Image (cartoon, rainbow, N blue to C red; front, side):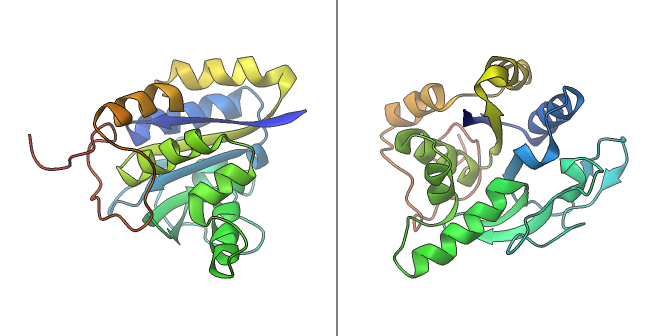
Length: 199
């Protein structure tokens, strides 16, 4: 049986390291996704250690954004996802988020990243935390995995400081947060914080 394993990373470099570890472990590119708040002048290090600028490969509306055999990081493209604004994204989840947004426009499903995560089998409470974490500036890595490889993939994500939804959700709820609000105006900041004003 296949399931979705997701983790939130506080820095993009942690998420990129996790993706490289997944690829090295033989997880197929088609089963890995990365979604992060878009930042200007950001380069990504591809699987072959070459720098690739954001938007190098675009096209999530149909077949998805993929690295074409160069590693998932080489396939990062710029998308606009409702509730998050511009994101750098690659993989099956990015395609699903765009499709969910289109479906939400007709009232079919919850849109954007939240809808895509729920459709992929992620618990609604966890999906809310992951969508909120991306909006706050975090980077989400999601992997489709067979049960036989689930423990290995979870360990690879944890090794690179991936945070699960229960842990991060507890922090958010302790600050008064209840759920991802696609229309809320929260600027990207510390992925762990609710209040983005300077401390």
